[in-house]
Image (cartoon, helix red, strand yellow):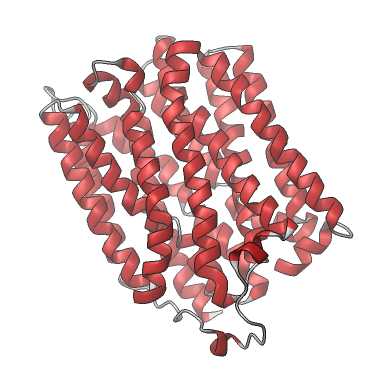
Amino acid sequence: MTSFTRNVPLLALSQALMVSALSLLLTTSALVGLALSDDKSFATLPVALMAIATMCTSIPAALLMEKIGRKNGFMLSTLFGISGSLISLFAILETDFWLFVVGNMLIGIFNGFASYYRFSAADAVDHGHKSRAISYVLAGGVVAAFVGTNVANITHDVIDVAPFAGSYAALTGFYLLALLALSFLKLPPHLTMSQSGDSDEERSLRVIMRQPKFMAAVVCGMLGYGVMSLIMTATPLAMAHHAQSFDQIAFVIQWHLLGMFAPAFFTGSLICRFGVLRVMFVGALLAVLCVVINLLGTSENHFWLSLILLGVSWNFLFVGATTLLTETYHPVERAKVQAFNDFFVFTTVAAASLTAGALHHHLGWQAVNLGVLPLLLLIMISIIWVGRKADNMPVAAQETC
């Protein structure tokens, strides 16, 4: 429990700073892109390419940290965040859309490393505390619900001639604080086969992929995150299209982030009590309800309630999928399995972010929401399928609690 009490709070703080920065970006990036780009369908291109950079970083980051240690990798990655925030600031001052894209991509590289905070927490504790460690680290994002969007709201007009330039100046502070927090980590070294006590040979990725749990974890993780990213990225554009103010947009994004991360205080306990698959299925149902509300109207209350539900849906699916994934590999296999998972997750996020702006611009808000329904159906099918493969669903919870 020493590792739990020391490392999990530090990783949760680092997660809070990372998501605070990300929430600021998600609140402002599409609006900055809309202002800087001549082609308005490119408004979400910066955030989409940030997601692509995260995707491309996921595998190299896992392999590099397996060599140099996760602490060193995490600290190194903050340099990309600092550089990206400064370049984005300069791009806004110079009204250079493509330079703004470059700054967002550098931040995406940082996010590619930071996405392993949750796995670092799970790998640093005993098997019985994995779901809670993952959940508590993600709970650090609750801070972001209040910090990131409020910082964006306070600073977006600090520099009169360059809206949002002040917001991107504030990003540097988030990454510097993350560097400080990460310096206090004391993570255990990565386990070799002999250290782990594993009598079996390291399995190939193809063998690991054949496990029903693995397939369900990857499908639910990537599609759940993709659905959330598509709707969330398009929301500021939809609200602006319906003449709602930046204050209203920031308010809705703030509550969305609260929905994403506040449940993490009890998601691990819910998984232990009801089973990981049941919690994930409820998450999928909440996403369907989010779509229904979005189709019913475009008032601030509609956006507010739907994005809260979308956030809780993401939390249940993402914590559940991450927990399920940790049951599919031995310690010696963790780098390649986690890298493979996150590559597919962030590939889907990138695709969702990339299409959100064009889909909203050309087809409208309703098309964005209707487009995610087939993805949610696939999530539900995969959960039901892996549930039938097991004798009963509570077994999954017993293995992680």
